[in-house]
Length: 158
Image 1: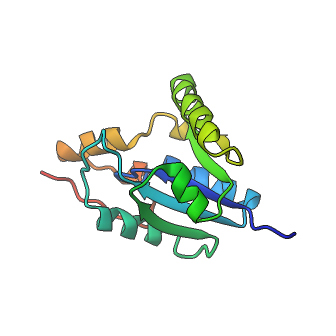
Image 2: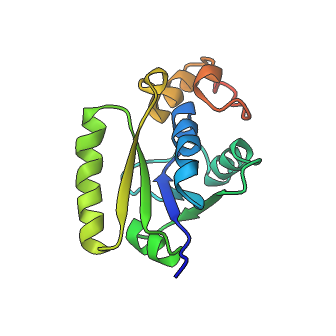
């Protein structure tokens, strides 16, 4: 049986960063399709509207047919089952990310035994970049150009 290797890259992507972009581009050779999935995180308040985040991600990967962009508001494992995805893709910046992501991966695998989480280390130059830092810089009127994908533009808030 020839099965497509589909990975879900979940997150809030509020906004997408160069680190996110790098993880996806480096994971592409491993999968037939990567679905970047903006999830509803009940613990976080969104900074940018969902539609804006979807558009930024679509623009970032517009020339790559293996990348799809969707949103979901269910358990990640249920979304993975719906999409026939057997892999979850996660980027790791540091050991704190690893501890947090490892626990989520173990719970997800308990809920969906066929699901594997694939961790990709961020490149050293992307290790300090996070969406929260980008939002903080923006909220004080700073320029975030060097931290976000080159195909998108985000204006400072002030």
